[in-house]
Length: 356
Ligand SMILES: Nc1ncnc2c1ncn2[C@@H]1O[C@H](COP(=O)(O)OP(=O)(O)OP(=O)(O)O)[C@@H](O)[C@H]1O
Ligand SMILES: [Mg+2]
Image 1 (cartoon, rainbow, N blue to C red):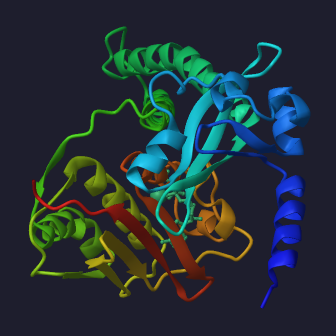
Image 2: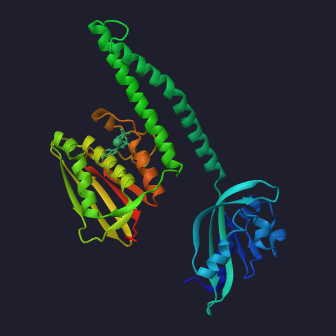
């Protein structure tokens, strides 16, 4: 058991040494403690910040619309990992991710508020740069590829004269390759669109077991071709729920497509759906080639393909990146467990809202 004295010391050490900005305010929102990282980020020294209203120091984009500390006291709950912008003492706008909570005394009166925040500017800048590079590249390559494919098609249709066998064979190859690149470019642009969060979210009523059956029916011909059986296991007593049917279906088709691609003929796949602690949990389990340990942390990255998968099937490494973007824009999480040679299970956790 930690004594009261050492608890206080512990708090001071933790508070001072935290590698993220942190400050405490009294019940009037005046700053009563300000750590070193907060000094670095805001440009205010502790002794200057103490006693000032926090809005004067942070000058946050939120201060005028909604004070998270006041709201946290009013609603008696914390705000975790929200985005905002603060303005440093020298006028620099800094994007931050913050959490706010209130401390109440034994009678339930507000005693103090605590705000923790970190600079997310570097991440945002990298992401913007990455998206800009991909988007410029994809748009620039789109037109020449479409023109190449169109011309190859005209030649193949003998619009400019008869072809011999060799010429026909080469032109077919040119058309196949340019169509492949065109599809890749379109998938990339769509992935950026999903990641930007600008896709329209169409939430509809879904009966889970019917939804799961519909998905399995759609992909079944592909599985049958390879002699693979798909089992479905959806909670049937589940009341209809409300979710983005089209997008979630897309994710599950992506995962089932992988499960079929990366399994040997004759194996089984299981798609299950159940409710847990207010979340909808979806699982796609296969008995396929598995993912090597070194590749596991990377499979949701753009264009990443595991070492063992390249020998087994073609692919571009976009399916999982777009699945993750869709799940996250729908407020969920996606993760994977796998052992090379022993199969793979993908899990999805989605916020579960009952039919309104
Ligand atoms: N069920 C699975 N079993 C084994 N490896 C898998 C499985 N699902 C994904 N992987 C690994 O993760 C990588 C990324 O998957 P992802 O779906 O993003 O790309 P892909 O299937 O290679 O290509 P595509 O963009 O056409 O879907 C795969 O190349 C493979 O190495
Ligand atoms: Mg795939």
